[in-house]
Image 1 (spheres, helix red, strand yellow):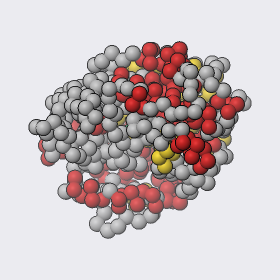
Image 2 (cartoon, protein in one colour; image 1 turned 90 degrees about the horizontal axis):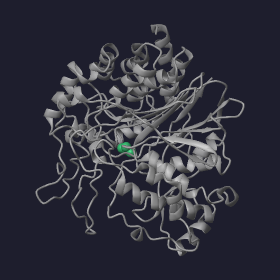
Image 3 (cartoon, rainbow, N blue to C red; image 1 turned 135 degrees about the horizontal axis):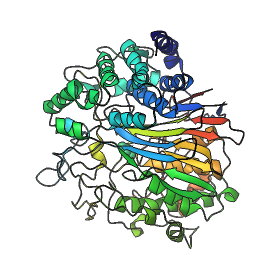
Image 4 (cartoon, helix red, strand yellow; image 1 turned 60 degrees about the vertical axis):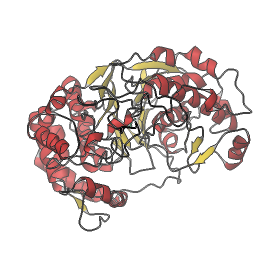
Amino acid sequence: MNKLFIYSLVGSLLFASCSSTRRQFGSHRTSPATFNKAAVVTAHPLASEVGLMILKKGGNAVDAAVAVQFALAVVYPNAGNIGGGGFMLYRNSQGQYDALDFRETAPKKAHRDMYLDAQKNVIPDLSLYSQLASGVPGSVAGMWEAHQKYGKLDWKELLLPAIELARKGFKISERQAREFEDHKERFIKLNPTGAAIIKNTTWQTGDLFVQEDLANTIERIANEGRDGFYKGKTADMLVAEMNRGKGIITHEDLTSYQARWRAPIASSYRGHKVTSMPPPSSGGTSLLALLKSVEQFPLRRWGFQTDSAIRVIVEAERHVYANRAKYLGDPDFINVPVQQLIDSTKNAAKLNPFNFRQATLSKNVNADVIPGYESEQTTHFNIVDEQGNAVAITTTLNDSYGSGVIVDGAGFLLNNEMDDFSVKTGVPNMYGLTGEKANEIQPGKRMLSSMTPTILEKDGKLFMVVGTPGGSTIITSVFQTILNVIDFGQNAQAAVSSPRFHHQWLPDRIDVEKDAIDTTLRDKLTKDGYVINPRGTIGRVENILILPNGKLQAGADPRGDDTAKGY
Ligand code: GLY
């Protein structure tokens, strides 16, 4: 990639990033962007621009995805990363699928009770905000692996936009400035020697964010491939960072990390083939189970967020999340009964006969497990290229900015994904119930995830590419977006903008966004035993629909700075 191209990229986007329209959620933006040939939707306008430029240069969807993953690590440090992990679902233009698991793993020195004190109580913040909170990062290995198998353009070329964005800097949005300030105290505490993200004065909208150390790290990865991260200088700095705190990731953990190709899982929903991520994500399994649970009901006739539709969706979510808590974990360590969990007859039976007048109580849908808190800060992006190859990637540091620890000298944030394990497995909780073994910590094991990159086809043709961040709400957000399109006839943007609600078995309540479920209906549901819990936004869904005329309709979530680009 020539320098001129990069300069024009950075130059043209410096302004774009700070002036990008902050689309207010609640304005219900419903007009989708429509493109003739290719589309990219990500959480950040600069990352979408990078993906678009790679496609225009002749790169395929996987090339663009690699470039976007590295660009997000620079321009969207909340969740974009090289110090975290994720999942990629891929469908080529011939209809063949592949799934790549680049989830973090527990370091070899990890053990089941590593976050408990002598009394078996969880030590506050240890699995969240410390060097010990990190799993072995998988993102660089994942991108390397994806590129080795499917990439077309030169690896180095794909990383150049990220390097330049880090080195020259970019203007931050109002939202980003606010977030940097909100997290400042944590950054200072965890990074006593300083970091680019910590500014002596207050971050303001339009400030230039320059990350020289990160630029150098990505340059090493550009020059040396995965070894630029898992070996040599970057690895030395990461291990030194571990030694500064109580971290346990070693050189051996890094060199032995492997991303894994997995067989995607698939089912059908009203004549569409739905393909999604297998374990160690619980996402695909739960999504397919949800779709199979509600398929028997006339949702389209009932209509969007009507009384009956809400009750059926909530009860389906209640049952599926109880199973999720009990059975899901890393398939390399436990036997996950995926086919049984998505079995249409079994899921349909759970809601049959259905009581439309009274809530089921979650305590009567007992799985003997109490699910833990799951952070909602992750990010998702979709790419469809000119040939019709499609990529859906959900990637994460877990919490916003991960553990908050920035590898000294290397400039990247580390994940706090260890918290996605059941840190109290086997320890009775306040209700006297014991946690499940499926997701207990073991060396080398992948922690359970909810990430749900999903691709749908209709009549053998690509139909929809979808995914979202949102921790445990990921699954229900993807589920409702699919229903919005297939059952409620919404376009790509409306399906994403529509208000959402969420039930996850425990706590036994329906979380609702401001505009979800009208107030009369909320009262009626409350009378019938449902607990309604108003909350902030749920998820940030990205969605691409392929129309019958071959055009691409893209929906970027108005809850953030998310942006669709294409041509
Ligand atoms: N850390 C969020 C997830 O993996 O689901």
